[in-house]
Length: 296
Image (cartoon, rainbow, N blue to C red):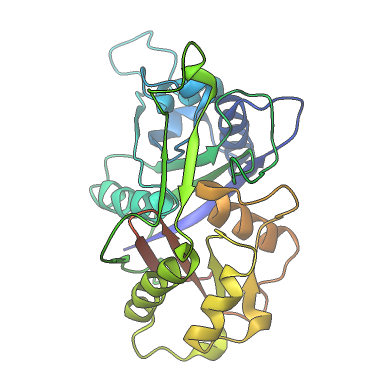
């Protein structure tokens, strides 16, 4: 059994900075591209971290599920139901969700699992990264399905590093006053890129094992614009094999991997590659990596 990407969806701009709206839009696009109905999605997993107005409850996944129009009609006892939940582990969250989705799909209890990701500034007044808040507003979706051949995701490998988190975000209760729902403090250690790179290399090497690197494209998280190529150099992967998302507005954080994959597929730039190495690294420091075998 394998688990493959059936369709992707992305959303940015569109006159809104709401990550609920962007993620819901990306989810709808992925269903349209796959040609399936919302009743065929059994589970929705949201991996976004930075939310509209710093919303804590209810789970953002439930709001995105509503925005996407998935699993909202319960007219009879046997109507299809969709379960949604948040899984937050920063930039690594999407690959953690792939782990969970693989386990769910292995049970045969649902046809599809939908992973959504993306972040926004809680004030909803900006969409581009800056020194104060280094993340761009964007939403993305990966629609996963079970398959019977060898294509799709392999085992997800994880790694963590010692010391402090390297990157941390919080609402400063001592200074927020009456505007706590619109502010966020992000702190990065001076050597955060080096520390993230170290754990990313560790996870990636575990995923690669003894693989031939010549047929592998690399898609990595983007804590800095140079990070994917620094990772490629450390792993011995050709620079031309690196695929990145649109970084014109800054780092899309949790949405970086699906945005980059969608971008590559849309431009048919994965031809000649048999596998994609997905690598994510973020606060912890923590990283995850997985090989994805492309459809022949």
